[in-house]
Amino acid sequence: MKSATFEYIRAGSTAEACEALKQEGDSIKLIAGGQSLIPMMAMRLVRPAWLLDINEVSALKFITTSDDGHRNAVRIGACTRQSVVERDKALAERVPLLRQALGYVGHVQTRNRGTIGGSIAHADPCAELPLAAQILGASMILRSSSATRTVPAETFFAGPMTTATGADECLEEVRWPVWDERRTGSAFTEISTRHGDFAMVSAGAQIALGDDGRCVRASFGLGGVGQTPLAFPRLAQRLVGTQLEDEAVRSAAEDAAAESDPGSDLFATAAYRRHLARVLTARVIRAACEQARSKA
Amino acid sequence: MTDKLYPIEVEVNGVARSAMVPARVSLVDWLREELLLTGTHVGCEHGICGACSVMLDGEPVRSCLMFAWQADGHRVTTVEGLARPDGSLSILQDSFCDSHALQCGYCTPGMLIAAQGLLYTNPRPTDLQIREAIAGNLCRCTGYQQIVDAVRSAAARLAKEKGQR
Image (cartoon, rainbow over all chains, first blue to last red; front, side, top):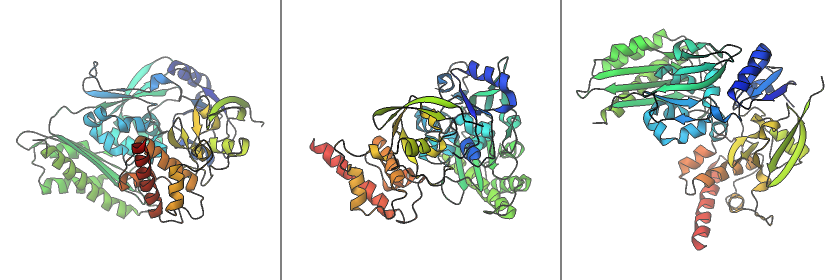
């Protein structure tokens, strides 16, 4: 037994989970897939007195791709397994960046267990799903025993492994905006020591083009180079109206690298990470643009 | 502090098992130490090496990244459950022997579970798909090539057997 001792509660419903959170507050930790939490418990980096298991709450497992009043978003229940999302063809068409990012998340065995909400609530600044959420401007639906609120990605991610989620709140759903532009392209890439490991730097972009080939909408971001996943809305806005010429892309990538704040560790120096930030940003913008151009 | 015990019922390799477990016992420790199913190996114990892979409801997962109580009400298949009913090796296991896909054998149970999981959903995988499926399992002996060979060969043999039936 590697974890410190704890007791567990199995929630039968979201309401039950919220009630338990209200009662136990800070001494309780929610467990979904557990693919980050269990190693942290094994290393005794976290020692919760209680684990609140939401794996059996079926109401937290859904993907709604039909138009149901949230016309421009796909709603994913927080406890939906990453592998289920990965296999959903309708979702891959509507939120392609999410599907691309998932290809870099862990391995088959961890995606079979890991959840969409778990990765986002864990908020590792190097993780792919928080970055995808940041780039697309996803919304997190947080529920407590008394209220439900919606928090946009830009304020949800507050720091390394830190989010806007209160001690009495449960992440219930993640809402992913769907871009309606016909000529939309997206790309995701990363550099890591081995495929499936955490990235030294990851990058993603989504670009929409008008019929004349001009960029009408752009968003891009970087993981692993700051306290949270970073999106660059001001720099992305600068691309709108351009033909995404080399100069425009190069300058956006250079400025994104300059604005990022990477650290050094065993695997990469800050300077190398900044170099990757520049190179990968340009690469994903170009790749997303190529994909959009191919949709004549 | 004494650990509180929780009742669980898990179907392991087709057999219903019930037990009382402390909350912090991992699934792999329960399988090995309580059920004595020592085919599943414990490597890193924090989700990196893949040696502890088992099937949960037919899909490969890491049994060091689950607590035993989380398997309550679910179906677990370990490497012991891959053999044919008469105890002889499955086609996949036999292919591992034929292709020399193991040396020390430490990673083998996890590799077999990962490969079997792939073949369930994708009976004719490409080499790239095989490599993707076993990417979460570390092997320090073979250099992986023979393992890829074994899975490819098992897929071909399974397809042939299916065609004959």
